[in-house]
Amino acid sequence: MFFEPLAGFRHVTVTDRRTAVDFADAMKVLVDDLYPSADQITVVLDNLNTRTKASLYKAFSPREAKRIADRLIFEFTPKRGSWLNMAESEFSVRSRQCLNRRIADQETLTTEIKAWYEERNRKTVVSVWQFKVDDARIKLAHLYPKIKNIT
Image (cartoon, rainbow, N blue to C red; front, top):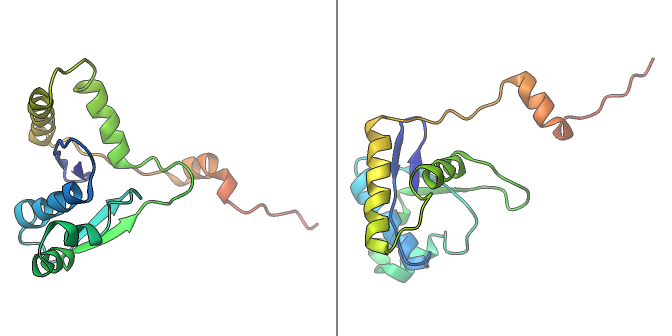
């Protein structure tokens, strides 16, 4: 899933697995079809082993792989700990609104998911994910240093 949270845009591709070639194909769509005029595209990724620029070289000629890779900046979520991010929130919404029943085959699944994300895009459903300072201090208290009273 590609998700641009503040623009309310998402794009989903259904594949049998999550292979390096599937990932490379998705990056080509991102670069050539979704953001053709962007000089650089920052992509936030989980740490699945296929999520590398090396995957581009498995799918495309070296020249094509480099052309795509040069437009992409990869930022990875932390390897340790839970990372609730906007894409995961969007996955949750998709599961509740679209995948909350048995779907017989991949063709129907693809049609259903496409209808779901096109409707969300049409409505420009955005995701603003942030903490207010007071909420962050409560929720993330373990990250704040403890200061001892020295009086």
